[in-house]
View (cartoon, rainbow, N blue to C red):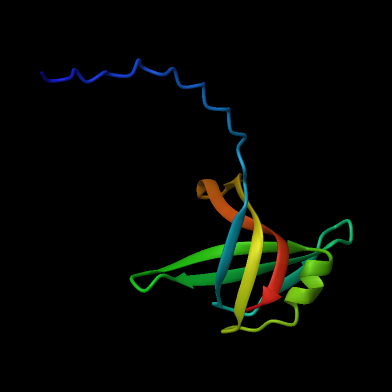
Length: 114
């Protein structure tokens, strides 16, 4: 006589916990140009770096903004240097004579030679 297979009762899955948005990126690339170093009107140092990231198929260019001590560190880098950046994504907009402009950039929290 064949035995009947017992089918287990469905198990209720607990609701997945809500994840908080995490805004963190880690990038390694080469500088496409020398860093631009300047001071704000309040005297804070800020550096803008143009980072080229190549995945073997295409190159993506991102602006990286480094403040204060990181800006001083960025001053030692040059075009072509490999750089390791950790930071957060920031989008911003402004009005220009050509209309509304938009930018997405990385605000660095760590910066190092790669």
